[in-house]
Length: 259
Ligand SMILES: [Zn+2]
Image (cartoon, rainbow, N blue to C red; front, top):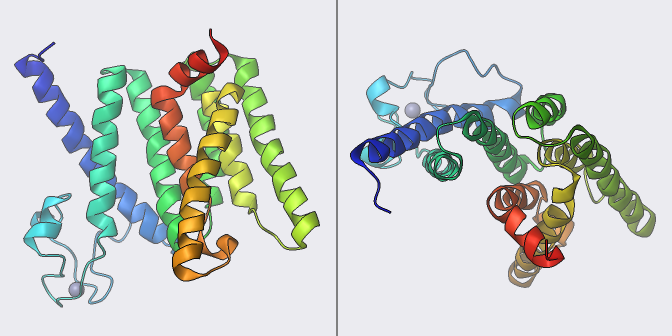
């Protein structure tokens, strides 16, 4: 069914909104690991400290106008910036198309934003910041039961099982290898996902992320000859799996259990 002009307009608004939020996620991604404030100072070049003017700070577009370089000192700007803005804009549009203009859209978008921050920090620093996951557990627990129609018990079980099964994997790994394989960050992230999506999502997330992680991990080992636990952080795979669950979890569950 073709969309009306108003629907197209709202879709464009959701893309612009997503890219602007993505620009803020960049601030979080680059400042949270350093312990700096995410509010002050305003955007500035990390090399020459010059403030970035509003016309050089347009999400996605400015990066290409400036050809990926600072206007003042010509230092290259990380392509992570436009990538995060593009990804956030895309997620905003896809969630809008799935949920319409609703509280569900807003909440799943906030959840996805948290996962985008976690993914890019984990890729760069191999840590999953507690400042996102620890407040995330109660916030997403409340929003799940109040707005996403997740049952109280399903969400509570999601927290316990999500944290618990990862704790067991980490414990088993430690016994076998006598080293820490899975970080405590993954445990808290899984608990946060269980809180928001309910315990029924966990098997999907574990299976999907393990398959994805194995494919990428084996490729990295083949190309670089590295030990996988150093090469590939697991947070990004869990995040991709959780987003996949938002879009197709219900269908896959129905298909597998013939409900
Ligand atoms: Zn500069």
